[in-house]
Length: 352
Ligand SMILES: Nc1ncnc2c1ncn2[C@@H]1O[C@H](COP(=O)(O)OP(=O)(O)O)[C@@H](O)[C@H]1O
Ligand SMILES: [Mg+2]
Image (cartoon, rainbow, N blue to C red):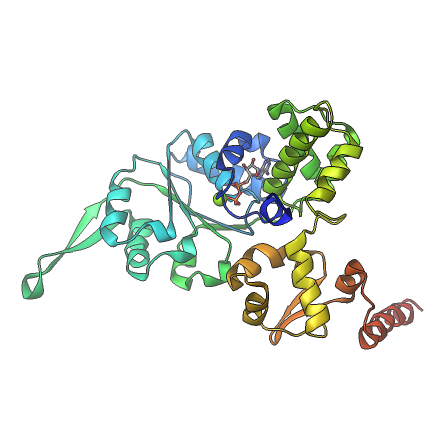
């Protein structure tokens, strides 16, 4: 059963990793949007090239599907070096880190996905590796134990995280630059979908491009998945060409609404509005009620709802806004409506 959860929740490549790979831009010039990040990367890479040094260690933060893995690949490609891919939980002990690091050639990029999930001991051995390109290990046991230092090639760590707040301060400090990826604007997503349609050889009209871009939760991975689903639908129900009528039918079958929200989003908002009087509700309570991992809600579902202004995180829990009630077609509670009106009156007062 294909539903909106599967298509809209942009978790890292559990499903369709080949689609991600196939559509991944290879060069910085092909990477759409995130202008500030691109400008800064260009300077960092240019400077590194002139000094014949590896690029500084980079930390990429942001919700899934916004292009962190893509950027790591691009840095390696632009610098003409190899990319080694690993992840925080995959490096189980210090020895595993040592063998990864010693396998790198001069200037290579080591991409560590989910870098907030490194084990403590592994993380601590990474510090001297990042700072001084050295790996310290203890040889022997007890009184005769000696610390030995192994020199490494110079390399670049590109770390990616969906939860910047979970990174320890010492690790964070060792990155030369931190980039926070943002949700994409509809016009940027449109460029991405148009490019993907070309690569996948999908015939699609202008309005369908707009439609898909507007409903992709600001997320390129979601945009690409929706394109593929809409294409499948158009093949079965039409002649393969994507038209607005077919795209609308496909999206409604997937339960993707006008704002790009799917069933998980609506269930979350509906729960807060209807069962908890608008909140505040604790994250773990919501997780239990929805049978979802709290961290999935936090990293995958909530960021876009917050961006839309339908959900707020407060110290006492999650709160639904008037916008959430409006979107769900629910009556806005009187207190909330009063606050809304207050804000409008303030606006008029301020202007007079
Ligand atoms: N800026 C972009 N321009 C074009 N395509 C993008 C861009 N960012 C992401 N994508 C597409 O979205 C997919 C998911 O990106 P990815 O880098 O895997 O995200 P993340 O690692 O942040 O979860 C990629 O396969 C790529 O096709
Ligand atoms: Mg990734």
